[in-house]
Image (cartoon, rainbow, N blue to C red):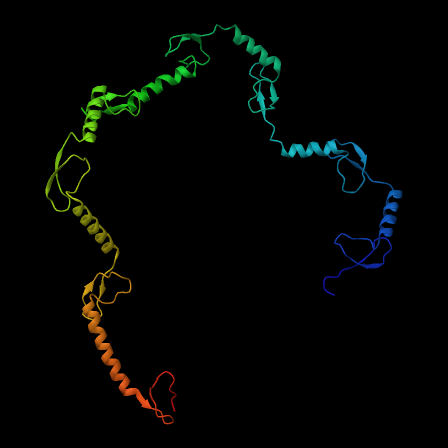
Length: 312
């Protein structure tokens, strides 16, 4: 049968059906007997592939004498390649343990640190506050980070706050980012003008946006002379928006183009609709007269239906 494999047992030689790909013995008894025979013969003696010492192997595949040897080779494969450098002081070659290592030992690093301490520290004045400080680098100009950042921020703020006054149109540097007026006088002039407009003390002459007539008002945002003009302007704007969205159609009776008010509109006016209906009614009456017949059984009149008439 397909999929069934038959094998010979390595111990007794009997044939059996293989249920797993690595099964070699026909039963558990044969497997135990084969292991006891191997133990009586003696385990093989091998050399460790790491340390080179001889050891008794538990299986033919074993290569290392213990887990330590195995782990050291596994770690060496993952580890980065060995790099050799020269010590800065004694100029001896050594294997580095970290990427920034410069000395072969702690004694060499301490000796150079002592030499650096004996040197006189360089004193310098801060470019911002003027205080003296011990410089760590040759190009150091400021005593700390605050002094280094302050002058840059001050220059950036001055450039950002340069503006024009909305009243007198003069250039000024504002104390706050939201400042609009150069002084309190300009601010007061604008505030007083707004108060007068609210009280109605100031009047202005303007033309109506619909009819064009001139009128006098105290309201700052008034555009129309009366409510009628305002309502008419709203209706006009609605029509313009509605007409812009619609598409023109052709009348089925007269053939003229028109803007429909409804989506299913077919005629431009009611006159065209009435005329078209009158023509259709006359056509229907003529068709009914032609196709009316009398029943041969009951004698009643009926209209012949063309859908259900059979061809002979």
